[in-house]
Image (cartoon, rainbow, N blue to C red; front, side, top):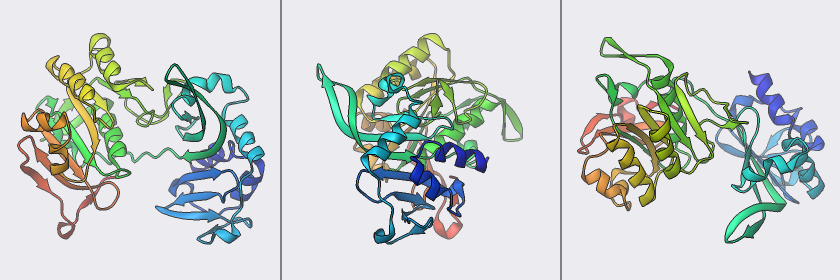
Length: 331
């Protein structure tokens, strides 16, 4: 698995960077990000910390020893990523990123091309950010018992600051619900049919329509689909028992979720936030909180993936997981 991950990443990098990174003595599972900017040092995020890629093939905190990227090298990387056919990736590039085999995501920055007030594409790429796919299989097991409701589940909202582990947790909860049999209070709950609207291609990390992350055997995914349209499509055509979406926020998102709930579908969603008070002040969501539409809230914080508490629909703590009690890190 590690060899596969290393090969997937090295294969899209320009030759010079590939050779240097090939000499690194690192755990590739801990490598999170590679950022390439024209005329700037190559920056890696490894184990939660930022490093420069040294010319001699090691990670350094000093920029003076770092290798720099040039325009032709970035063009070379784009050729590898697009399999020498950028036309095939035009639709993805409109969204500012590409997804490659293995579920790794390539964020792009450059000159945006607009047509009729819509983004048509991008040219003169100046920065490439390689975000490595990250799964934590089993991280949802500790919170799952709080989400189950007999033979169904509670409408659940996962709350965390940016990069707090909410998508990783959501992904594994989807997998657990979908996979088959879930143990609950000394009995078993059959697997659920789950529909996923993956607007930013981060939950499933689809490559050519196939999820690269494990979402379970009963999961249907709409990749790169806007949340509102996707929720309506799934309800009308796929008969899901559960719909999962990432990073809700707009009033339109909330209205679409209400439509699904009123159709008998349960919701799993995530939102940015550091406290329950922040969620109560968000437009649209404030009303759902007041009306107790969500029956469970999972609050992440502290370290990445650390569950601080699980609340019920009234805002009462179902379980508190504090540092002094050994807060659970699920992701």
